Image (cartoon, rainbow, N blue to C red; front, side, top):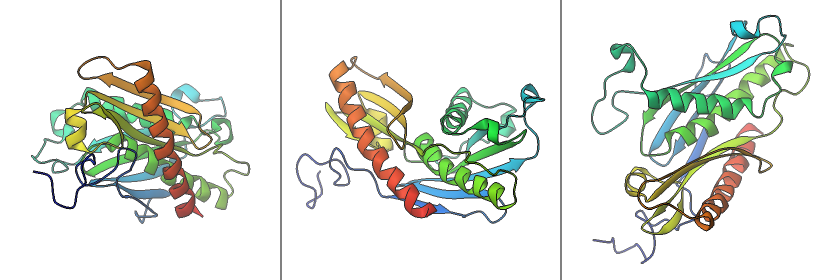
Length: 246
């Protein structure tokens, strides 16, 4: 039954189709990391840290270039039922590997790796609470943590020219009950006819689009509608990134 304060046509919780959940970014959340951010997309909460390592991966040895990579994990009670730690199983799931590679690719896309020197920045994304969109929250908060880490490197003289060329953020969009909507929570994501994740730069460049038809195939016009929603949401996220990093 629809709550009395919810108008017809609105999503559960009263959001309009083009409305983000409540989003917050708290930089410097972790005391010991060179960069960190606690990011909240509604009830999805992810702690992201950036750790500087004074060596690059072996495949970059002698090139003078650095690297940005990511690791991702969900805490056992980040979901309704306790899940086993992947470390206890001795291997990461395919989903975990896919998400951490996405986060790494997204952050490398806006970096000049040749400026880092032979160093590596590791972005750790730990999901404290999951309600849909953990990967998009990790990318959005990951940028804040990375930016802080680069700031530390500038402060101590490790880098003297810009490393970061643009902002980057991510958001989910989907088609739920025939309606294109922005920033899906778990209930919407689990019932969506189409589910997509968009990674864009602050200037609007496309970094990655992941889209899947869960039911009937979606049309090109629907994809354009989803991209339009994603641009709106990511524009808001970039404004928030700039505010918390100012």
